[in-house]
Every structure is written in C-alpha cells, then in structure tokens.
Image (cartoon, rainbow, N blue to C red; front, top):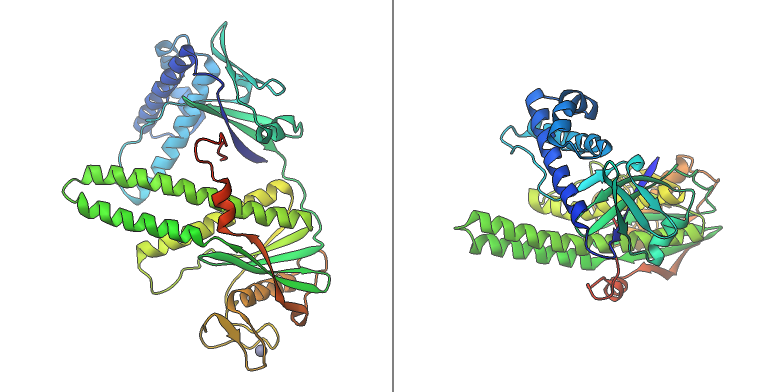
Length: 404
Ligand SMILES: [Zn+2]
C-alpha cells in the first residue's frame, strides 16, 4: 500500500473548538508518552490497555477514536526515542511540542467534491473545516482509485493521506540510465538503436548547501559564547535552506519521471548504499551525500506511485570501466574517460552507460539492448536546469502550495 500526504490550507482560521481539541490531543499524547516510558511499552495496543481508563476520566468529552489515535502518535514518538536511546543514553525525554492532532480515516469525513472536512470534537458536536482546493488538489480528490487515510490537523493547515495499491510497473520500451553526481544527474537515454546523452543539472543545490555551511560556521563563531542562541539560529537557517533544496530535488525528480513516463522508460540508478566519497571529513561527507540519497528516495517513491520500473545496480567500477572493451582503468581520470581502445566520453555519461549495461546483463525486463557504438556524441537532452526552479519557486505571494 502506498501513501501520499497532501497538504491543504484552510479557507478560514481554525474554529476555536478545534483548537481546543488540538491542545487536548497534544496533552493526551504527552501523557501517553510519559505512561509509555514508565511502563516501557511502545505499541498503541499496550498503551491503550494501560492508560485508556484513566485517560477517559481525564478527557471525558474527547471523541474516543481521537484518544486511541493519540496512543498511536505517542507510540511512534516512543519508538523513535527507543531507537535513539540505544545509541545515546543521554538523549532527552521526548515530548510533542507542536500543536497537532491526527484522526484515523473512520474518525473524520471528507466530502471530496466540496472539499469540506467534518471533524467530530466530542459526541454530538462536530466542526467543519473548509479546504482551499487547487488544481493540484483536484487530481487527488477526483481520483477515486485513491482511498482516504489519516488526517493530520495543524493550526494553519491539514494533511490528508491518500492511499492506493502499488500499480504494476509497465514493461519498458526504452531505458533511462542515470549516474548521480553532486551537481547533476548525467546519463544516457536508449530507445531502439538510438542512444543520446541526457542531463539534469542541479548545481544550485550545491551552492545553497555551501551557503548554508558557511553561514552556520559564521554563526557558530559569532555566538560561541551563547550556545543556545547559536543552536536556535542554526536550526532556523537550516530549515529554510532545507526547504529550498527539497523543493529543487522534487523538481528534478518530476522532470525525470515525466520523461520516463512519456517514453515508457525503465529508470536505472546506482545503488548508493555504502557509497562514500573517500578523503573527506565526516561532516562534509554527510552534507554532500544527503541530497543524492534524498533524490533517489523521491524518484523511487514517485516511480512506484506511477508504475514506472526502477532498477538499482551496484556502481562499483562504473566510472572506471570501458563499455567497449571492458578494460578497467587504474584510477579516475579528468572530466573525460579515455580508453586505450580509442573510446572516449564524458566521465559521468560513461559511468551511466556502464550502469545500464549492468542492468541489462542482470535481465532488465523488456529485452532491451544497448550498443555503445550507437551513442550519438553530439546530442545532449536537458531534463532540468536551475533556471527552471528559479522561475517557479513559491515565494509566498503566488499562492503555490507546498507538497510533502
Ligand atoms: Zn576500451
């Protein structure tokens, strides 16, 4: 089962009764966290068994489904805490700070035509939440193959989970093989006996990251005497940059998926598990790897949602192998891969050809084949470039709604 959370803004302010419910819900979650820590349990059922009666008395008017859902949220927090605690015993006791509530799909009604949510507060008392529905939201509301999952209510917006069974991936008619680099996806697109170079350039992400990194350094130095302020400032800066990067990663993924969907392509990616650039320091390494991993996550998830096949292959030697004579070079070279047999090509594109050949040799569906000799050296298809993000980035005035 695949789940996608779609963010909706509210037409008006949250009704005061709903706000009270959010506060009650948070209280119930934090109480169940406390109970769970004492009793050393993390599952919703166990929490329910231990605490339901007492909670019923403390929150006599809360709709009982919401109470159970508070146990569920607390269970999630407790599981996270347990994982962290195993690594670091000194980590803090968890609590939910943000005002929020979650309702399971039986505990609310959404009219998919009018976009009005009916949310029970307590027995016999409901509130209506009117959603702002755009064309983007219509796609989900009108698609009856999607069922409704949980509803998360926040003070200024709600998140509706849409669910569907994973569609069966189509049989590919072409292939799009991508080598993932710090500043771009470089690859080869193969259809019939034609092969072309393809590129999605996102070097602006590296620039944003560098900016963030520098600013963080400066803040830490300037506020060295005040750790708390320094930490808060860094966190705020971080969240903003994170949004900008996330937005671009989604744009890049969308451009790749649109291309693959239109041409019925299988997508070949390197398996980034365990890939770590050598010689760089711990922090830099983490900083540099996460956008790539995140990009793969987004591509894989969205491809699953759309039924586009994705093949992941081991990238070992992919940047050092000659696709013609299979000779493995001793070390990495410059921007161009050159082989003794006369083959020469952009290093990244060459790597993507090797990834594709590995995928084909592993029996990629559809009987696709690839002849490196058919590669058209003079053609480069651009899937994405930074200017495309700059044109469409939500700036708070255009009314574009974020996607999770
Ligand atoms: Zn060669």
